[in-house]
Image (cartoon, rainbow, N blue to C red; front, side, top):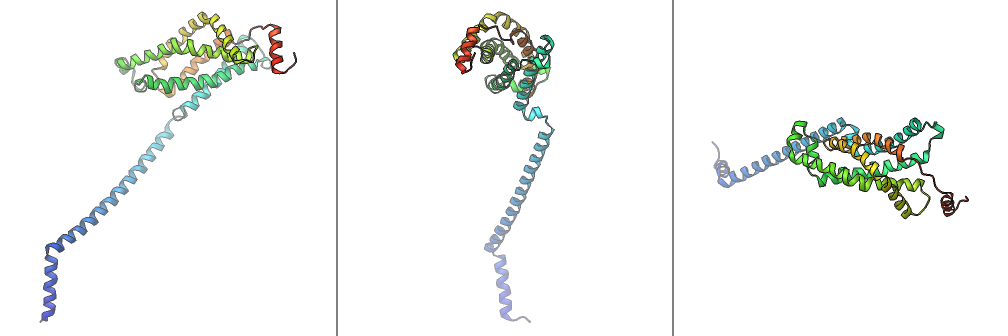
Length: 274
């Protein structure tokens, strides 16, 4: 037979265990443990999803071509190389020069112009600025041909880009820049104002022929370019520009004959003897 103190202690323990206060405390502790466990599991799941997303992104990035991952660098290289190659082709095939007779100074005009203007400025204009000025461009480029035809807003922006390129960019920015760059290398003065003035005067004298040829080539070409994905559109433009550069090199690449007094004046300004 149990003693009275032991019975009393057992009864007290039973009462405490059965009391609402004790049950509430135990429930609170158990709930905290469950919440902590759930939080730990959620954190682990989140980390797992982040790792999985990172791995998936890395796989997708690796699966992309170099042009997709580095669109600016890729088209910059294409613009520079094709501009130089087009001029060399004209000198060798059309002008019938031997390799040791190539005018590398003339070719240097096209290398600098292809790198700085065609690869640098045109990318800034036709990718960075056009994406802001014509907001449907990127979405429109991803659509199929049938979807493009039904997308009136995208078609309107594409036509605006073509009009801007043909009537603003090429006649008002491209040609003056090209003729000025040419004067820097082949001109008779070291004054930058003379480079701009002489270059723009030569462009003005050739404007009808140059602009007509420009519209014939770049009008249809732009209609294709501005419906392509951005990472393809600029390399496509540079490939079309290969033939345009060949035309410009053939018709405008050589330096004009200059008067001996002008040459002597330039040599004296540079510090050389005539």
